[in-house]
Length: 286
Image 1 (cartoon, rainbow, N blue to C red):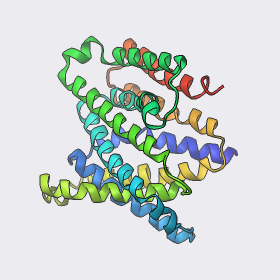
Image 2: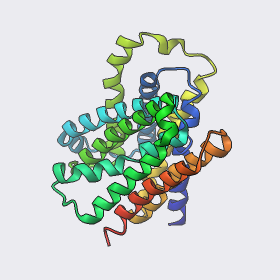
Image 3: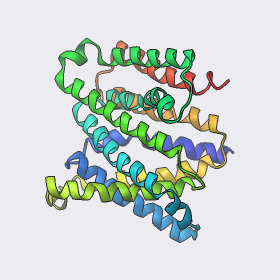
């Protein structure tokens, strides 16, 4: 149990540093998303091959339509998230991105036919107020910050669609879902990248290559392996609690390591957004 917790914590810490590496890659957001999907998916396939882990082709075929949709959404979600990192601070981008559970709560009654009770409505309003604090007066007057936050919210919207579509998957394991989603995201992004960016990806600067490899190998392949190997031995509530390490660590890095501005209003906004997600996840369940 302790080993599983350590693996999960390490995965969350790795996820929390994604923004730092993306900011140092001299490629467009779509190109970064493409390389991440290819490298990350390849790492998972190598792991499956070396460990001789069985993959259910039947399960993948039975869920292929949903996997294709969610894989496409994963790719678009990454593009918007990476664009958010380009325009605003890591803390702004991360907290905007963690609006995804709020979108899930809003659309669950329509898509999953779940009831939207009074408590969930309160959580939604908490998150909206929190987002108001994040944007603030500076966010409205600073065009780049505002655009970055919008990109973060768009990324959250697509990630919410991944969460909701995954609810319809049946009899398929997490690692199988992720491998297919990563390669589908790469396949769907490839035509766009070739049409818009051409062969610029082949001309990437030597200084960006280490960051690309780290993003694909560590932040995607290894982090996902740590995550999936840990959740098999942990309770769902434990996994949900540990998931908050990711945004908190990202905000810490943004403020203390990169010296990005982190005012009192943004701290309050972050507490409201993450707090609303926490309350919705646990207190409402009880």
